[in-house]
Image (cartoon, rainbow, N blue to C red; front, side, top):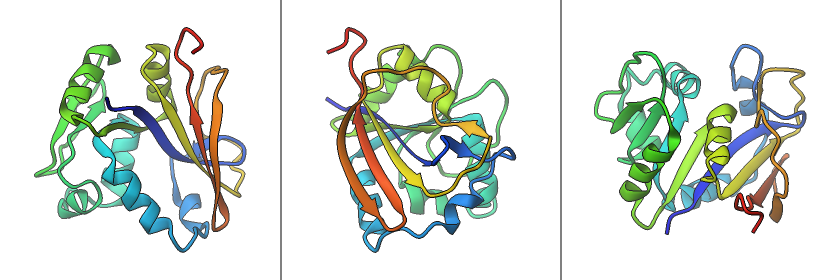
Length: 188
């Protein structure tokens, strides 16, 4: 059975993007020598992905994916990606993108069926991840905490979530990687 996980980088003060929705601050932080191996290991367990419109647009623009659609394959291979949006967005040529809106529950069912035995990665933003949690669909939170404070921007998770259980802590260069299990809605 696949698990639904949120993996993201965050600043010390709990923001995933600065007030201009930029992640440039993140690329200035030194990661550990095995960061690429960790990424490859994580992606090897991911069957499908979900992201919000703001995250999708940032990746699209930052990586110039309309001009270089091969980068999508380089980063995400042929994994299907559900983009939650209320507007028309350009599609990366050759990418398996599914633009959706509304309730996350039926979409999550589709995602799990497509993921097979691999995991569902909800990459952002925080509000989208929160809706997965609200529906009882979030199993794990993986944070790469950067030694940066942003003072504002897009919050990591803009809602109250209690009872997280720390599973692991790992030094990653100047970052700290944390993995939390998310309790089921019944507290188990």
